[in-house]
Length: 171
Image 1 (cartoon, rainbow, N blue to C red):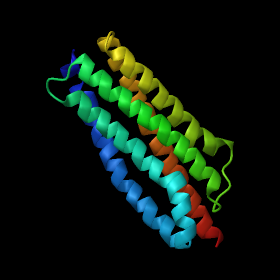
Image 2 (image 1 turned 90 degrees about the vertical axis):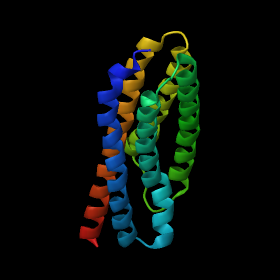
Image 3 (image 1 turned 180 degrees about the vertical axis):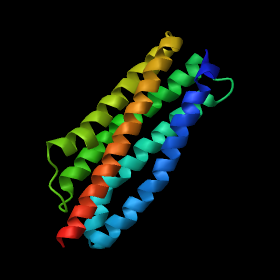
Image 4 (image 1 turned 60 degrees about the vertical axis):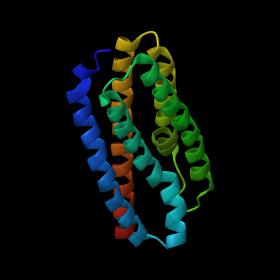
């Protein structure tokens, strides 16, 4: 597999995901200051933690691509597992968003926090299964999924910061 051709791309994407994961901790601190701890915990589980998970999945994809000696079978298996785990986690996220009472999600929230990640993880699952046979082409799809999850995380982190800032201003 031509994985070495992807090293620069994944160094950039993986580094971005790692840095943004650190910045998400700042969002968590801001959120904890804005709300009571009990209310903030449910909202963070529904809206903050998934953002960190998406960034970590991007970092994991970058690491998997850069592992020396990766074969189509090993990479496909790992991507399939990662995609399946992401689908399950998207369902968990939807349940958490529905249960929390600190914020009433609107359509855009459901789309960005549940819908887009669910689709991205579904594509990752399918692509992982296809990597066994179409490894070179699958790498392009995996790159698109990694970018999609990175952008979903960026959007959701920004959305959280704006919500916290405007809520603090109102109070």
